[in-house]
Length: 502
Ligand code: ADP
Ligand code: MG
Ligand code: ZN
Image 1 (cartoon, protein in one colour):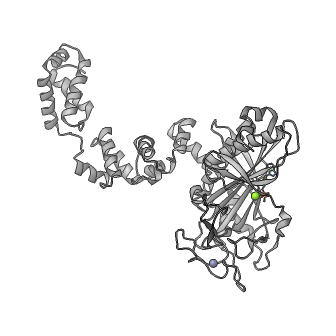
Image 2 (spheres, protein in one colour):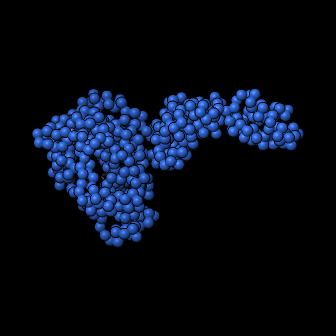
Image 3 (cartoon, protein in one colour):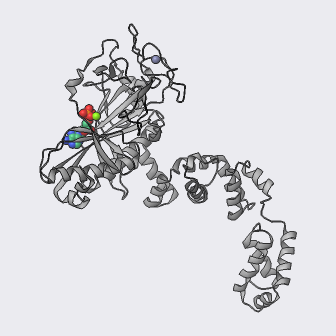
């Protein structure tokens, strides 16, 4: 398959209707693994967070992590799912070096949560309901690193290294029902769903859900059916599509590729595919196993999970406000448009803005700095807003200094520059750089007198009633005070001294 066989997006839609299925794995942020007491802290030396259970040594026995189950139930409830009265784990049998037990402890036909939905809001404000088939508990595998190959793939490698620190970290897999009816907006719906799910997971506090760190991973299933036909086509499953943008691109690419194959009279294979970040394409992985290949059977070493209805209701009481509803509420409170809210979200500014408001800043000021100067600086440095070396408390303090008139916008920007450069807190930067607005009336009056003296012709014009000319004198004073004066006050003083009404 070459890229020239891709059908244009418009032509895909003229003949076909896309059907999607999204499988999202979320790594829970529990302190210990799902079936043993090993630590889950990231960044430890390889294989230092392992024990006989997560290494699959003979005689070891697993025990379920109660927090893992609790998180699974809360995710299920937030996704409007039913919670199983009784369910079991299952062994999914296969050999792979990163999974020393030779089976993954998962759930099969008895998931902890099932039959739910998540409403996602599209860019134009329309709400699209994505139905959830199930959310089930399982464990992560270890991590293989292939050495010697060109791309980090096993192909061409001389040897591989294995780190089992990740083996046994709790995962929740959330699987949608086939998503139909999205039409041209299928890629947008896919992206919006994953984005919404990520926000929800974060709001629940069960995981940081950072896709770039592999804490949340998405497989994109896609098929096309000729318009008007009921029966679904064969799907491809693009694995590990690990950013929101990639989810959108992978969906779009697969639609165009499927149409190319189908138009040429070919058949789509039910296979897994790899996504390539560089050009947004996918390439063939392996032909998909059927469930029976895994010889699933109920895990005999673990007791069934039977959450009491009281516990489930108690957990329901801990659910946070849904991110979508919270966004809409904030948008109304702040009096901003859908589009402006979208920019806030795209910039990753919502959390910093809220934290700054929590620290005492007015909403509009908090928004102004995070979406203005700070967004510009983050963009320049190619980092997230959240990783700029300035805290919400410091931004709140900056807002306060501006509100009390100690800083004007220009000086505030210089203060930000100092804080970001590691020169200290806003107050320290203001001190060290001498950035306070010149509000000392004596000093200001002197600067104004000098400006009037030095620009006699302009001063005469103003005396003669040409008030608009005052701008030039204001400019001169601002220059003389290195921008550290309050321009409005300077203008007042000039007019006062020249004896004209403003
Ligand atoms: P597997 O374990 O083979 O990946 P799952 O049932 O876990 O199977 O996930 C398959 C995903 O693909 C689900 O989200 C499902 O709704 C979706 N799906 C199933 N059939 C189709 C199809 N024909 N076209 C697109 N998506 C599909
Ligand atoms: Mg799958
Ligand atoms: Zn362990």
